[in-house]
Image (cartoon, rainbow, N blue to C red; front, top):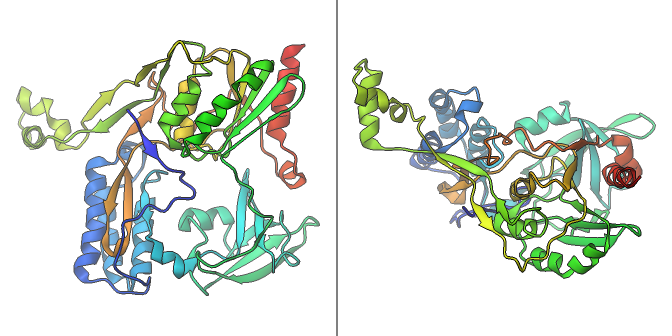
Length: 432
């Protein structure tokens, strides 16, 4: 089954809306309809209720008054976003339309998590003399950064509102500074400049070739990978880096995987989905009421919304014309490896010449159900529960590397790529 999902960290899924301000009001009916739509569709379609400790109906009753009390679209969005966060799933949430970013956004800095710590990764050039890139953030509004971001999910807020950061420099001296948020559409000149590209490759040394694939949302990465196959074939080892790959189209991931696996087929993730059948639910309701006939008992899962439809992973035969990479391969992975990039790792699983190195992946994949909500807001609900073909779980767990290498704060601050160096050292050791 083809699953298409764009990069999680950067996309705003939206339907066009008529409202042009986050301070516009909603009618009572709009407020009730929006949160009720999300609650209802999640109740029928969300696939991880057995993994979270939440009474969804009770949560709806608790959040409904908050949604009704919201004074404007921004407050309403925040209530719905908090409600969706209860489901603790990376493919489930509330999303904003384009007009939001004329009025909301973050303070003019960007953070990077390394282990349990947060550092300034980019900063407005007007602030660089006060807040150096690499400065550790130890508090946001007097909260631990991890607690603040778990509760709010981002630094975004209404333009002009403030956040107070407590920083710690490299001499372990702490200081605080209050920064105003800027609109997402405002031009901010960040340092260092963003140098993201979808695809990179280079010869590391006489025996090792390095390929970095930062997305599977761009079809050109397949063609570019195929273009460099002759160079890869001349090497003795391949290091393939998907640490910053936030996902995209699983078909592009599969097409590259076809060149790498040691067999003439690839197998995608197995999956299951919830199934609703109104008649069988009616039969099951009698079992819940105490009737014990064979028919009622067989169908009680339909009444409790716990019936599943299971699908094995799709098997794709690989053409004999596909050029195979048969040299040892190390795949670099980490917590920013998401979605279709995790599907890519499942395609590679079981090939004896391929190992993974780094930290566990994000553990977030599946097929989102898209919903239209009032005032241009939208939602997604994960409706497909992926596993390895053999049933092993990885959602909200992550795909664990074969070789664990810790990403240390001191390496990040020094600009040392400890995972890449560990991969090189491992391959050198293999050669001895």
